[in-house]
Length: 422
Image (cartoon, rainbow, N blue to C red):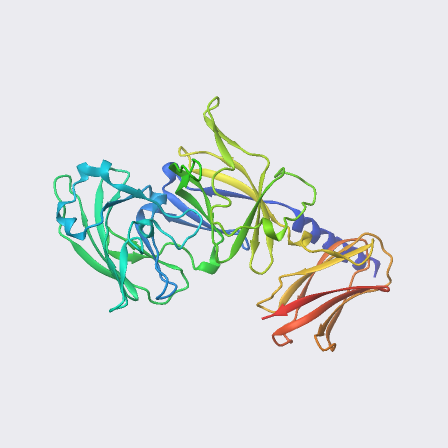
C-alpha cells in the first residue's frame, strides 16, 4: 500500500513538473524567407508553405463579406495604377512613380491591399440594380524580381471574377479571365496562383493554426505618418486567439501574473515584429528580453511565449519558448490554504481540467461537485488533500449542454464558479 501511494505521489509530481516546463520551438522560414510557417500551440505543430505558391487570398466566409489580400510574405507590392478601367490597354510600367501603393491591413485579416483602393469597396462599386460589386480600379502587382502583372477585379457576386495580364518586359500578355467561387470550406480564404490560374492549398483549416510566421508590410513610422516596410514577424489567427503583449522578463521561472482581460487584443499583429531589433555593432539581431506574449484561446486556454533567437534572412530561423499557463488563470481562493479553478469555460467537448493549489494539508477531504442551476447535484469527485498544485481531468459527457455550477469544498470552506457546457 505504501509503495502504491508513493508511486501515485511521484506520478502526480511528475505531471506538475511537466506542466510547468517551457517547450522550445524552432521555426525555419528558410534563407531569404522562402517559407511561411503556420503554428498551433495545442499540439506544437507546424505547417510550412512555400511563399511562391500563391499570389492572392480571397475572403469567402459569406456572400456579404468581401476582402482580397496579396501575398506580401512573398514581397509582392500592389499599386493602384488607374481609377479608369478604360486605361487597361495603356498601363505603362515606366509610370510606376505615378501609381499609388496600397497595402494589406496588418491588424485585420479581412481587409486586404485591394480593399484599400480609392473605390467605395476599394476595388469596385456596388450596383444596386444587380447587387453585384463591379470593378473600377486597375491594379499592378510588382514582384521582387521586377516583374509585373496588371489586374482588375471585374465582378463580385458569390465569387470573384478577375482579369489579369503579365508584362513580358516589352509588352503585356493576352488577358486571362477567371472566377474564384466562394464555395464552402473551413478556411476563411481561397488562395490563388496567378501562375497556374488556379486555387491552391496554403493555410491549414482555421481551427488548426494560431500564428503564422513570415513577412508582411508593417508600419515602421507613426500612425499619422506611416512608413510601410517589409518586416518579418508573426500574425495571429483572430478567429481562434487573442494576444496580450506584456513587458516582463520572458525567461522568468516564477509563476507569472496573468494579464487582465482588457490587455488582450484582436489586432493580428500584436505579436508582430518588434520583439527583435538589428544590432549595427554585431550585425545580428537582438531579442528584447522583456517582451512576453500571452496567447489566449476561445476556450480560455492561455499560453505564455517569448522569443529566444532570430537569424535574419541568411538562415530564416527563429525560436521561441512557450508553456500552458492556464493553471494560473482565475485561481480562486477558498481560504489562505486552498485555491481552485478550471478550464476551458465554455467547454465544447464536455471535458474540463480542474486546477487546485493546496498550500497546507488541513482538510481530511476535498470535493469538487457539479450542480444544475436548480441545485441538483449531477457529478462529484474527490481530489487530493496533499499539499501542492494539482490538475485533474474531468469528463462531463453524461451531462446535457447548458449552464452549471462547479463547487469545490474543503472542510467548511466552499467556492463556486459557473460552467457552460456546449
